[in-house]
Image 1 (cartoon, rainbow, N blue to C red):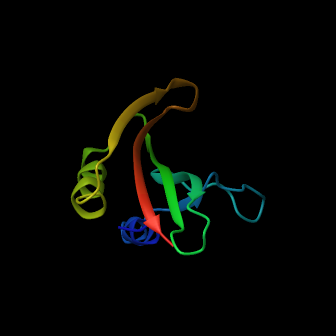
Image 2: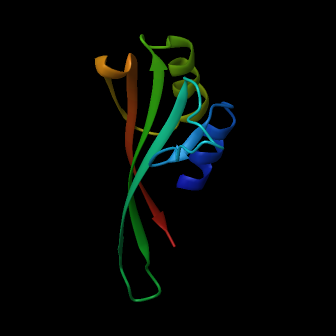
Length: 111
């Protein structure tokens, strides 16, 4: 499994998606909910140029309006992360009237 494969699967959900955050300007306002932001943390090891390994910790965050969207969550779990071990966490963000559902997982890639 590669990170690129997982990102492509998320794109097939047809939700606005951004790395880290959406950049909001007058020309490009923030998208309406629901949308996804994702964060990536990578560590590279085995730097002998034969055994390059990349450990990736990723968090894909689904933001929805006021309450969890069980239909989208089901699609993520069934169509995107069906072969990935993940941790799921849900937080209500009262100040923004939204809910964040995060899917956190770790993968290792050989480069």
